[in-house]
Structures are given as structure tokens and as C-alpha cells.
Length: 163
Image (cartoon, rainbow, N blue to C red; front, side, top):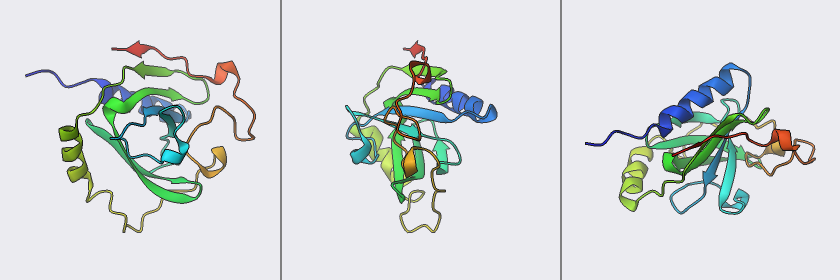
């Protein structure tokens, strides 16, 4: 039996580190056919998501996937991301974080994940994510600050690649 991936543990640890120190945790995700993300915010096959507790509702960073609800343009959306699709997690404010190799999910993995998640991601729920305070009410990052100005190079992630 092979050991489970350390990726989900590292993502949880860096998320906790960001939150404990007042930083905003962002993840960069490969938006393939298995990632349930708002396609209108995907750029070059990737989407950057704010996974701070104040930007998400029902955030769950599990061993196989990350799920939460967030507002995009004021509309609550259910997000489901296979952990293998997360290629970076970093603090928005200083860019410190970690990068990962993309691990393509298999259809069998995602069928099981989707079945497990259906009840927890019920669209009929009364729970709604709090309104986002950055990026003018959307969760995707376009490389600009809240006023639309480009982020300086120091605002870009400083990442280590993990294989």
C-alpha cells in the first residue's frame, strides 16, 4: 500500500499559517474538467481563489478535495476542487507559499468524490457565503489590486516547487 499524498496536509498547514498571521490565503487551481469552478473567471486554464474564512462558507480542505461556497459577482457558487488540481497556495500580502506539480484526477476518483459531496453541497441550503471584500465582489485574481492597479512584482507569489 502506498502512502497518501502530503499535498492536502501542506495545503491545510499553509492555510492555517496564513490565517493565524492575518494573511489572505490564495490558491491557484488548474481548471480542468474535474474542477467545479466558475468558468468565466478561468484565465489560461487556471483560476486563483481566495480561501480565507471570510471569503468562503463551509470551507473543507479534505484529503481528496477542497469544497466551499463563495460569491462571484454577488452570486453564491459551490466550488469543488480535487487536491491534485491545486498548483500553489500562498499569502496574497507577501507571496510566501508553496507550489505543487499538477496531478490529473481520474474519472473514478471524481465520481466517488462527487457522490460523497452531493449532500454537503446541496444548493437548497440557506447558508450563503459572506460578501467578498476584495476584487470587487469576485473571488478570482486577475493580478490587480482592489483598485484595479497591477500588483507589483513583490506582490507575486514566492513559491517553492514540491514534487
